[in-house]
Structures are given as structure tokens and as C-alpha cells.
View 1 (tube, rainbow, N blue to C red):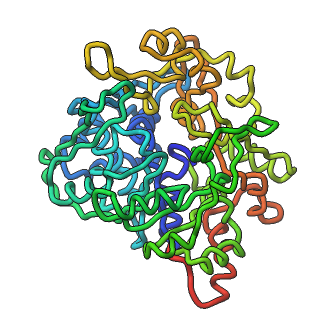
View 2: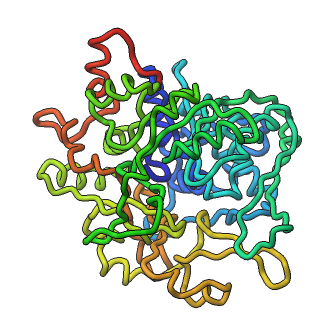
View 3: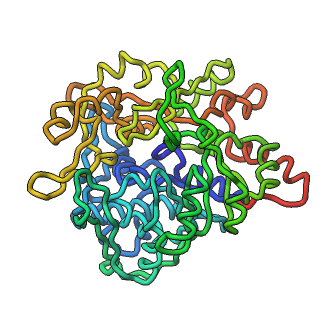
Amino acid sequence: MGAGVSDWKLARAVAGQGQLGVVSGTGIDTILTRRLQLGDPGGHMRRALATFPIEDVGESIVDRYFIEGGKSDTKRFKARPMPSHRMSRHATDLMVASNFVEVWLAKERHDGVVGINFLEKIQTPTLSSLYGAMLADVDYVLMGAGIPREIPGILDRLTEGKAVEAKLDIKGAARDDNFTTTFDPTPYAVPVRRPAFIAIVASHVLATMLARKASGRVDGFVIEGPTAGGHNAPPRGRPELSEIGEPVYGDRDVVDLDVLVDLGLPFWLAGGYADPKKVVEALDLGAAGVQVGTAFAYCEESGFDADIKAQVLDLSARGEARVFTDPVASPTGFPFKTVQLEGTLTDPEVAEERKRICDLGYLRTGYKRDDGTIGWRCPSEPVDDYIRKGGTEDDTEGRQCLCNALMTNIGLVQVRPDGKTEPALVTSGDDVETVARFLSPGRTTYQASDVLDYLLAEVRAGTSAPTG
């Protein structure tokens, strides 16, 4: 659903209803610091930070970023450290604490289960993020957008209080190079519980490999189809585009669920399953349940900006909401589903007018410099900068800055020195076209409980309910 859309409020609402509520771990340090700079409405960030196991860490974050009454709409947000393979003490503390805060709030006031979702593609913050979520006693870790082979073993070592490292994907690295990022939990000295690990995959082949060859225990899978929102796995085989420029998926992209059943691990189906009959179908196929994103993304509890929710729900109600699977917009190189909205980066004029800048850096790619050290570049940064760092101009064509756009989506929009603000870029699954079905007559909003009641109607009429 994008950074901050599945936030603590939404995750808590879902978990409180007996299902698995999942917070997004993407961009979480930026989200925390910007909430504080907006004056921390409701005091939730400060309340959670006050419970952080290392008292002076929470206090220092509040001292550095909190603005009483909130910053002016015309003022820029203060920057936080860019993610890197060598993070400062403050950057590490901030990453640990921000993940702690989101999970702690999501788990507050109920006894349900809460998970956190990370992208394998965003590697440098992962280790400290995992530990921060574990400090808040997160129940599940979910990870996709890559092959999270090392994560189960890392969770094991963090549970044992041991330092961890993860291999970095560095462009131009030689076979014998050993580029890694590390994290040592010793300064925090707090015992943590190992959460269950769920890999998000789009292939039974990948699921089989992870079940057998991951560094530790894999506890299940989310099987995500190409209609799901956010990043999609690229089609298998030679790339092919449709008449309107979307990636074409074929028979090779169909997951063999019999293979999943034979693995003996629970799995959830995602992408087009936000329907009570599809929930029953998934259970009949051997799934433990379904993963649903888009239906919850536009409910009252989600982190989407209220104006974006209203605009999308209005388009959906009129039968005019459309999603385009953009093969190049994301700097990751993965297809990215975008809702076609006026005033956002799906409008060519808006995209052309935006001045390129890379100041959040989550989707940067590491590359090996001539001197053997690691540099960082992003195909969405200024073209000349990218080329100077060894990238090609072709790689920059059509790329959008997801990092800044996703912050705008949730009301944390950055103001530039010329007074302009960063445009949004909304991502959703194909289900957005009919998401207005959750609106009761005369209502313009709906709640997470409305979605759950709809999805579970046929299951509740039977004998059992899905586990998440």
C-alpha cells in the first residue's frame, strides 16, 4: 500500500478484530521525524518513545525533531540521515526507535497479532529496523521485493543478542567482494522474541527454494499475483508490453498451489482476493487465508491523505478509477501500479515540471567505485548526477521519485526552496476500480471493520475463519 498507508492505526484496527494487522516499515524514520515536526497530533509518537527501552534515545529524538504546535505549512521538514551501509549512531537509533514506535502503537490496547512489512530491495535499514520491531514484540515479519534468503537466520541471531550482517547487492562488485551492512544489538541490551517470518513471493519455485535453502526457519508465504498493489514481480521470460505499455503476464507467472500445499507451510493468497467468495476459494485451495491491501487503503483508519481517499472513492463510485502498471516508474526496476489521478506524477505535465532531487534515498542502488568503495545512486536523481556515478541516461527515462511521492500521499509533503511541494503518486491494486463498494448508502467513508465484515461474511456463515 505504500509507506505509511498501512500505519499503526490501520494495523491496530485490523488486529483488534482478530486478524493479522500489518504496518509498513518503509520510510519509517522519515515518517516519525515528520510527525514530530508537525507537532505530534495526539501525542502518540512521544507517548511511544517514552516507553523505548533506552530512555535517552527517545528523549534525544524528541529534542531534535519535535516542534510544539507544528511547523508552518511553508517551512521545509528537517532532514534525517540518509540510509547507508555505514550508519551513524543517531541514524541507527532513529531507525530502531521508529520501527519500535510503529509496532508498539499498533499493538496497544488489544491482544491481537501485528506484523511489519519490509522490502528486500531496501537493504541498508533492514537490520536495525528488524531489531526495532522486535523490541516492540512484533509477531510477524513479512518481506518481499527480492529474495529474503538471509532474514530468517538474522532473526535467529538477533533473538540470541548477537551482532548480524547482511550481504549488499552492489553493482559492479566482483565475485570475491564482500560488501555488507552490519548491526550490533549490544548497546540496547534488551532480550527480544523471534517473530514468525513470512516471505512474499510470486513464484512457487522461489517459495520452494526459500523453504529449503533460507538461512533459518521460514514460517509461511504470501503468494502475490500481478493485480496486487505496489511493486509487482516482473513477468517471467522475455519482457513484453501490452498495447497500452503494461507488462504482460502469462502462464509462467501462474503459481502452482499444489506445490505450496506440499511444502507443508501456511500460505496466504494476495491480489484480487478482496471478495467473500474468493476468501472461501482460497481456503478451499489450501491457503491459510488472504492478504488484502487496497480495500483497507481507503478506509478511515489508513494513512492516506483524506483528500486522496475522497478523490479515489469518488472516481471508483463513478466507475472511473483506473490503475496503470508502470514498467519504469519505480527506481527499483520492478513494475509499479499507479492510480491515474490529476495533479499527481501520473500526469506527464506534473512529472515534467518536478525538479529531480534525491534526498530521502531509500531506493538508491549501491555501486562499486573505481577505488573499490561503495557509492550510491538512483535513476530518479538528477540525470547528470546519475551519469557521473556511472549510470546510463536510458535508465533515468520515466523514473519517478517514489520516496518523496509516498510521503506526500500520507500528508507529510516536503516543501522545496522555491515554495513548490512534492507531488503525490498513489499506488493501489486493480481492486481500486470497485473499492467504493464498501460505502454504505449516503456515506462518503468506511471503516476497516466494514471491510472485514464483508470479506468474512461467507466464512462466518460456515464453520471456521481464516487465520490472517
